[in-house]
Amino acid sequence: MSQFIQLHLLTSYPPSNLNRDDLGRPKTAKMGGFDRLRISSQSLKRNWRVSDLFEEALKGHIGTRTKKLGLKVLEKLKDAGIKEKDAFAWAEKIANVFGKTEKDSVEIAQLVHISPEEQQAIDQLVAKLIAESRAPDDEELKLLKAESTAVDIAMFGRMLASSPAFNVEAACQVAHAISVHSIVVEDDYFTAVDDLNDKAESSGSSHIGESSFAASVFYSNICINKTLLLENLDGNEELANKAIQALTEAAVKIAPKGKQNSFASHAYASYVLAEKGQQQPRSLSVAFLKPIEGKVEGMASEAILSMQNTVEKMDKVYGACADERYQLNAIAGEGSFAELMDFVIR
Image (cartoon, rainbow, N blue to C red):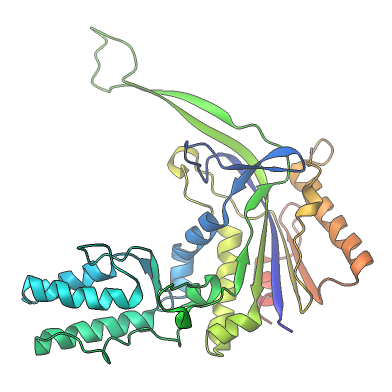
């Protein structure tokens, strides 16, 4: 049975538009019959993965997700003096190892996640082809690696349709963050004035626009299968622990980047419940099927109380749903971030 680490977070954001839909409005969802604000799991994972915090903690162990692998190889070959026709053909062969390329292009049709070990192998092969001025052979094109130290691939998985043997099952599951209360998306009407307008001919605005926003306390749920994470990282427990701590810190501190210049909506989690054990993971979103109203203790405090009550009742019905728990409550000033970081890996 796998060992699971679950993180349940409550994070309060002021007016913001952290994750937009195709119309530029904040993403929403219906839950419990009410409209809720939503941040997609894709947005959360992307912002954690590319954050300075994640990069500093896991430098050298983060992969690259791109369609432009072949273009970068082509550029290196041409810059080294390889004839364009040969450079294109060689770059196409290398790119096709990772995914089918577009017609008459070396750009891969779909995004592919490349590990540091694979990138190193590509760089070494390109240098060899330049030095020897020749095309790669079939043996040299075995660039895909089953062994990897890319923690983002180990955590969030990889799918290669053309090479399923090198797929990686995600060791981390991330739920869409959703507001614990009902919401109404509002529109901000704004104008911009030309600094050089002397008002002699017109005193009006030079630009008029609208921007949608909403404020919310979000519930987020993350589940890490540590057993699978260790397997994906070839048993490197030190690296696995670094990855778990980096993800925990990012989830607690990093906000999505949507409209940040307009709203400055940065926030740390107000409450974190961390759980460890071999029990089947379960979300605590049921605590918010009935929207929190916050009329007595305030929205965040009542959300914390609802979550704690749900944990207690689930334990009563199902037996202990975790072997160990740790709570950080910034609203009450209880717990510490340092102790949380120690708890998730010990």
